[in-house]
Length: 201
Ligand SMILES: [Fe+2]
Ligand SMILES: [Fe+2]
Image (cartoon, rainbow, N blue to C red; front, side):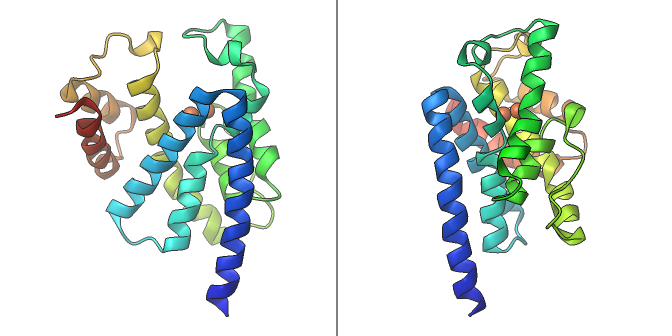
């Protein structure tokens, strides 16, 4: 019975997530593709690390898939800019709060990823229905979501901050990841395997 309920619940969550992703695809296709890649990386890292139940892996993928859903309220013109004025940056920062509010009632775990994936301007609260154990599990996995997000942005988008990094050079990419995420050794090793696939090494 428990499995059946989990299965029904899972179908419902997938349907809600895919509706949001559809809206994102229509708003900005590049952001939609970025979101799916972050979801795939997050799932792969969890799979490779091991020890996660299948339903938890599903939640982890949704955390990645929907982390930037708040960008639905940011104009595509702004999303396409490689550098931002301080005023534009303030506008972009709103996507964490917007994403959290979109998802808080229907997908509370993914809502946390939307709210917390930028530590510098994270939404601090948690959806009321999450238990203490769920909050702790989310806090533990959030650095991996942030790492996957950073890795994908580095490999696919132009950013003036990292223009000096040769994306094909695994040493440069690894040392940047290690500098930005000093406690994520294992996840970085897993992402470097993705890096090798991307650059064809
Ligand atoms: Fe973001
Ligand atoms: Fe992102």
